[in-house]
Image (cartoon, rainbow, N blue to C red; front, side, top):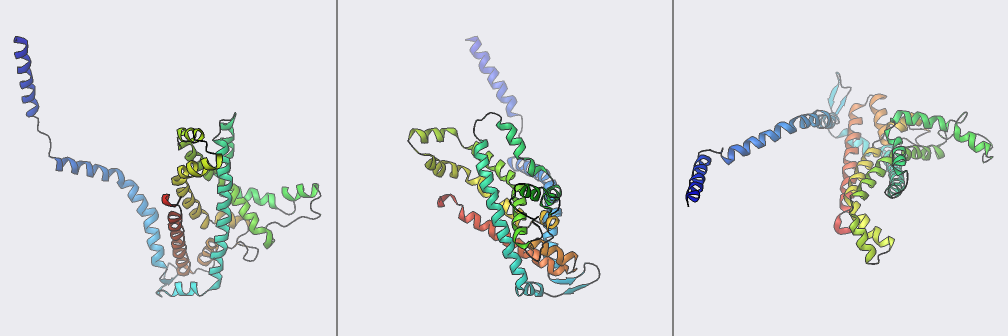
Amino acid sequence: MRNLKLSSLSNQVNKGALGNVKKPPFSKRFKQDTFSGYWFTLPAAITLVVLVTYPLLYGAYISFFDTNLINKWDFVGLKNYTDIFSNWNFINRILVTLLFSLLVIGGHFIIGTGLAMVLNMKLKGIVFFRAVLIIPWLLPEVVVALLWKWLFNPIYGLFNAVLMDLHLITEPITWLGNKYTAFFAVVLVCIWKGFPLVMMMMLAGLQSISTEQFEAAQIDGANKWQVFRYITIPGLLPVLLVTLILDTVWWFKHFTIIWILTAGGPGNATNVVSIDIFKQAFEYFEFGSASAMAVIVFFVCFLIGFFYRRMLRDDDL
C-alpha cells in the first residue's frame, strides 16, 4: 500500500515537471523547419538560376535582336523566327537531326537493353564485364572522336587496313569524306559512345524489380514473352521514360563528336542543327538568328519529352 502511494506521488511529480516544460507553438516550429529547408536548397537554387535559367532567358531575349553582343542591338521582333521558318535549309537541318537522333537512340536502347539483360544474369566474371562495357561513356567526347577519326582515316586507318587484308575492298574508302558513308559513320561512333548510359540505367531498373514477381509468373506457367511483356516492361517503365528523355535531349543537341569528325560535311550530310547554330553564331556572327534557332530547338526537345510522357503512360501498357 505504501509503495502504491509512493508510485502515485512520483507520477504526479513527473507530470507536474513535464507540464511545466513549455513547447514552442506549432506555427513557430513549422516556420523554423520551413526556413531550414530554404537554406538547404538555396545553393542548388542559385546554381540552377545562374547556370540554367539566366542563360535560357538571356538567349530568348537575344533572339529578338539583330546584334553582335557589343555595340549593335537593333530590335527586330519576330523577324529572326520568320526568317528561320521560311528557310528550307533550317527545316532540312531539323530533319537530319531527327534522323540522326532516331538512329542513335534506337541503337542505344537495342544494344544497351540487350547487354543489361545479360549483365543482370548471375554469370561468372560479370562484374568485370560491367566495368569494361562502361568505358566508352567514361571517355571524353574529344578523345572518342579523335580515336574514331584515326580508325576511319583512308590512308592509315585500321578499318581500311583490315578490309584490304581480307580482300573485301580493292582501294581505301574515304569513310568521312563520302556523303553516303559519313552520316552512318557518325551515327556508329555516337552509338558506341552513348550505349553504356542506357545499359546501366536499364540494369538498375531490372535489379529494382522484385524476383518474387518472376517466380510467381513461372508458377503460373507464363512463358518468357509474357514475363517480359507484363512484368519486365512495366517494371522498367519509370527508368525507361527518364532514360529516353535524357538520351533524346542529349543527342538531339549534340555537337562535339560530329564537329570533330566531319564539321557538318561532306556537303550538308552531317550538318545537324547544333552545328548550324554554331556556324550562325561564331562564323557569321548572327547571334540573334542563332539564339532564335536555339529557342526553337528547346521547344522541339520539350515537345519530344511531352510526346514520350504521353506515349509511355502506365495505362497505355
